[in-house]
Image 1 (cartoon, rainbow, N blue to C red):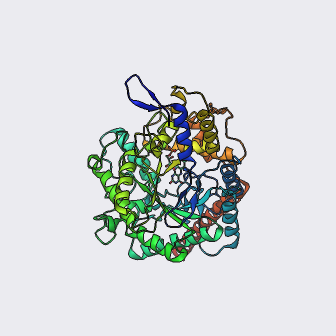
Image 2: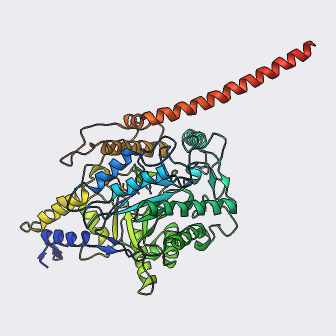
Image 3: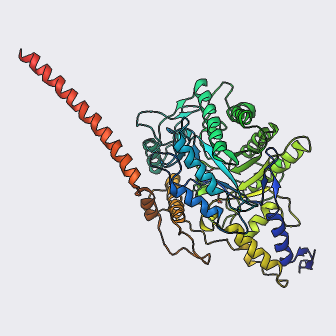
Amino acid sequence: MLYTRTSSHELEMNMADEACSLLDVVFSPVTLPVSRLTVHNRLVKVALYEHLAPLLGGAPTRLLHDLYSRWATSSLEQHWGMIMTGNVQVAHDHLTLGRDMVIPESDDPAALVSFRALADAMHSPGRHGSLAIMQLSHAGRQSANIIGGRTLLSQPLAPSPVRVGSGKEVRYALDALSYVFHALLFQTPREMSIQDIDGVVARFVHGALVARDAGFDGIQLHCAHGYLLSEFLSAKTNRRHDEYSCASPQNALRILRRIVTDIRAATGLVNFAVGVKIGAGDYSSGTDVGLEELTLSERIAVAYISEVASWGTVDFIEISGGDYEKPDFMTASSSKAPFFARVAKAVRAALDEQCKSTMPRPLVILTGNLTTPRAVQQVLGAETRSAPSADLCGIGRMAILRPDLPARLAGELQARSEEESTDDDSWWRTPFHHMPNPTPPSWLPKIGLVGAGSSMAWYNVRLRALANGGGVSADGGELDDKMGPVSAVLRMWLWFTVEDARKLGWYLAEWAFWAVSLFLIVLLAWLMTAYNDGM
Ligand SMILES: Cc1cc2nc3c(=O)[nH]c(=O)nc-3n(C[C@H](O)[C@H](O)[C@H](O)COP(=O)(O)O)c2cc1C
């Protein structure tokens, strides 16, 4: 290995060697510890809700098949190590934004064909193809009115009856506005009974079996971002006093453990991957500190992850964070450092100690703002002086802007490793693609969910463009389309396929039928009363 002496007399690897070393680390295969499946490189396209399933949920559509084959076939040489679907809901009446893929309730051959086509589309051709992973989720209390797939009066399920946005103290006009906004969108959930919990466990297991039968290589259980499984982990949303309370990691994770155990009982250990996405507590920034310096909520996150690892049945744990009340992770830009790196590093150290050689150690995926070669290098510990924060890099928004990111990174690193020695650091700090940060116009009230909503809309419209064969700028610069946040929101929501129009037509006709029936009953009752009075 070659070193050059810097002015500060520290030893530093030269840039060509750095490129060579990162190339080796990123494109080295790794084996999932329980399923024994091979991930061919360290780049993971993480779950991104697509908004391309039928209105009010359903099986994958042709657009979804086309979208996933963009990621799978973006290059012939280097693929993504894993490709994950956006959250697929296990309950048709607990959707997120109304166009979620949904696991069919019973054996529906047509839906299975469609999921099978999706798994096929996600498998890249050749020996070193990506693993196709389905993310399974239940939206819990964050399933909004109407678009969540329920009528206005029916409540969503949650560990405790705490509505989204109800915990914030109302002191200023903006707080009051935010309160009303959340009250219109979300209902106070119904506290889950033990039978409800049993039902949800069964739905997740059924979802995993659908994934396996459709040809997916595994599933990821969504236990982050404030959805149902993560609601059990936080004192903010879990006020229970029974064995599902959050008084201990064992209680808080009991529902997740039951799901994992039952899935493993049904699918066996090998050849089918089971992973978990879990929240890292609060935001954590840059500095490299030991476990004792983490915040309380970060230490709780480490304890949760250690507990999951102790089951010995989970292949990978993805670390992420935030929820609908604190959705900053969706709006942050490439100028910020990777999120949650501190927690991930503490997690990895704790798991190394805990698992030693006696137990399979789940691989750690770190997701959030990995936008530059330097960030990937730091996370994987490809520098000489730093310990890795994770085994795999989770890439979200950059995978939309650069669906061929693995091949591009490999090409660039190869070229740099063959270059004459240079100390120019700028390439390492340049984002893989210009990253837009579509913030809402200043005249809109500053409500977190509104900001995250416009950012989400921007990326959802780009996902649709990708599915239609466009959506990528050739040179990594700004995309031609200067779509603003308002336009993004309109384009996300005012989009209907013929199938949707038919569904919407039936939906409105059904409402009209009930409204007319009600009117006729009232009219009849009034006429009868009038007739009786006249007698
Ligand atoms: C449009 C969009 C949709 C998302 N959908 C999901 C999802 O379905 N499931 C999930 O776990 N995370 C979802 N996320 C969060 C991402 O997986 C990821 O955690 C987040 O974007 C941070 O990573 P990044 O900085 O690489 O984008 C979504 C993010 C965006 C922007």
